Image (cartoon, rainbow, N blue to C red):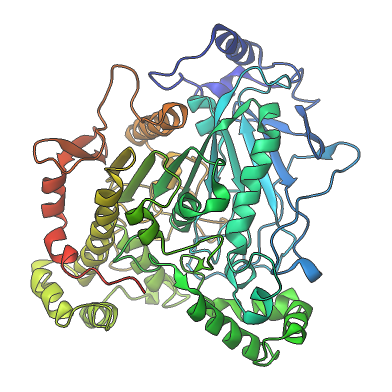
Length: 571
């Protein structure tokens, strides 16, 4: 039985400023009041939707219809490995879309973050969360396609239950699994010379989902002409890659980057040049026993590897920010943005207050399996980080000394706090470089998520303070998020103040999906980004109330004068 009580938290009200037609309002009212709208006659029967590939039957959960584990591509196995995804063939009968599909092959590299280690290649499935099924396609809600993060090497969708964003924001939310690590981002001359699109297979998977949305989303109550693509971490980077991909033209209409868009001073912020990517691919083939050849026999050998054999080498494979292959990603994203050669759509681009702390937590977690013996960051490690990261030829001579002078160890209570500040300031000031490039061309809204008491899904570790760490904002949009499978991750919940911040973020994201502006009618707490000295430009999201800063104020807070002077050139 579909109970009204399940709607209390996630369907309080539609985002301020949204206009729904009388028909849409009546339909939503009926669904909320009666727990049903045709074809949602009963929760026992389950919602049924006819897609172009065949009928799918979902479930009712958390106030919306959920369709889980819908295959959008043929399994990329055998001869389809390391090829563009192939649209899934139609099926006969009703597909039971009641459970998430398999998680894509990955290793556990990020502590308790991401999906379970596995060798699944048959993993190209998507999920739809909708408050408003309308087979006739009369009520069109904006669509939010969300891409999970994980460095393009791991991650999963089951933690991204889109019910709150769908019910409370009156949007249709789509999430997907896509190929990761070596399965999703391998370049090799033997493969790249076969005459098909190559290298960025994970990105092609995501773009096939966008094409699926064009074919099918109207049947779920969505508007194919109003699609927001968003993501967090590498999911955000991938969303921005589709901004610069000519293959995505017309498939997306707004973009949300949660930590972060591709930008300088960010590890992986520049895409990998093809020659570098292919050299890595050759090294992978040699390690896999396929030799250093570049012919069809080498490609055949690579595809003959079992998933376990290929997966055994994926731990050292860095996917980074995709490959400049010349077709899917025709040039460095920063070049595309600077020259206007991208899909011009409104953008939300933001960070969290203590991005680097997440990576420090991973380092400490991975230092020992015994939590009592885990060691927090040391002064020696901090100094090594600065010298090794910023002492390369990519940066001006003397950059480490300038950083250490601006961020002296003795000015901070612990090495963790100064290390966090350096890594976070560098990445955020790099984002600001991008914001300044894009603002004259498209509407840009920038923010910092600053709830330092956000739930921490790592165990409490010696000497480590959680702060507003990278990934800490995800749970405010996807309430069931806890980093990864539990255990080892720890499930924690938002308190009442955090729930209010969560409601505000959902309203902002939904308003943006509806109109391209995160503000509601007559309510403009979030300014459009500008560098004008007297104008607010940054929204600082925190409890108990958010606030704004001018660009100059924020730049001073983050020492952007230093970081602007050491931006590395494009590779």
